[in-house]
Image (cartoon, rainbow, N blue to C red; front, top):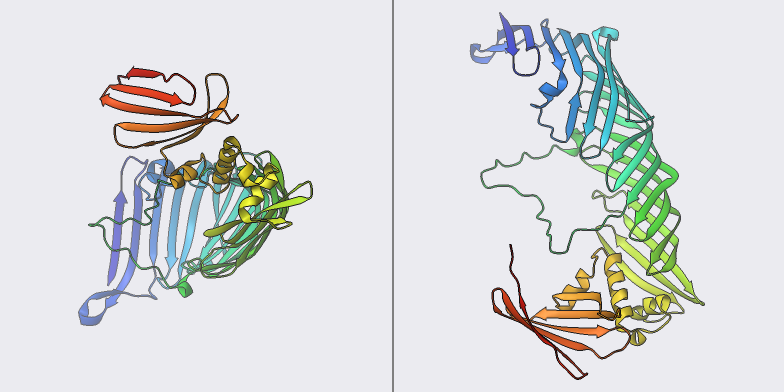
Length: 454
């Protein structure tokens, strides 16, 4: 008539984890025992030690938790309406989220008995500096009531984003799907536009090995916790990198559920400019709009302008964030290919020298995220495209291509208009090459190079 459990889990993590439970059973279908939902429940969980030793067995590789933890819990009531009592405590703990760069220090956890036999957990922590974080979590009769507050806490520390926030968020309802609501204010954030990966690195997407089990389908959106959050930033949202130095404001609302959130609102520019090839383009228009679609893909409307003696050139970014469109317009209007040459150099594209043309191509490649002229080089089908310095100190553009595995042909054009030269390198043996250079001037040097790798 009663099922009794007495279990102990030991390992290199301090004292053993002890579990004791007792529950009435009744005869179910076919005479098999079944748990009596309304019968009295008696259970207890005890453990004491450094949570870091036990945390090594938790399947959460991006999270790290350490500190002395003491658990002594008693569970009463019934299976349908359990009541938790006892104590949970920690002093001097530390938590880290390796992906977001979150660091919480001086983590203290205390417990108290709540109304109706529930358990209340109170947590306080610092962000590693002056920011504070507090949380109150109450369990009782299968329901959860929680509140999280943050005061100028730096909770994101990454190479691309650093953010300090103040927040007041609540969660209330069934433990499996409590309703989440509240406000988040971004006090200050720094977003760095880091260089993208080379074009040759492909995103393979989700990879599943042949012997892996089929992934379990995600739950329905209606079964997930409902969300009602407001995220704002009155200013001090800085976006910098690739020549851009700008400040933005934000007003977003997140609704729906955790499995299917819907984001509405807008991120607007406050001020900013782009340093592009020595010219300052003012951020005249900047809007990133979230329409609330099922797929989170904001709509971009950004325009940067530079006035060169009455000729206004514009760099315009539109479309969705997953596939933005880059265009160049001007006042008075000229063909798109003439906008940047006239804005940057004050000349049409046919009048540009080879050095200016290469500088412009590299600038456009960096602007579009290709960087280093790689996109231009690949588009022209070349193996070498660079700006070098000749022996007399003159800058020259060098282009070249491997005609075969053993033959390389290149052209060097000084930017001062001097005659160009052609070089040919032939590998006659694995370590010996013959290199010849010829031009319009008299004399053609020929050399033999010997190399050894060690």
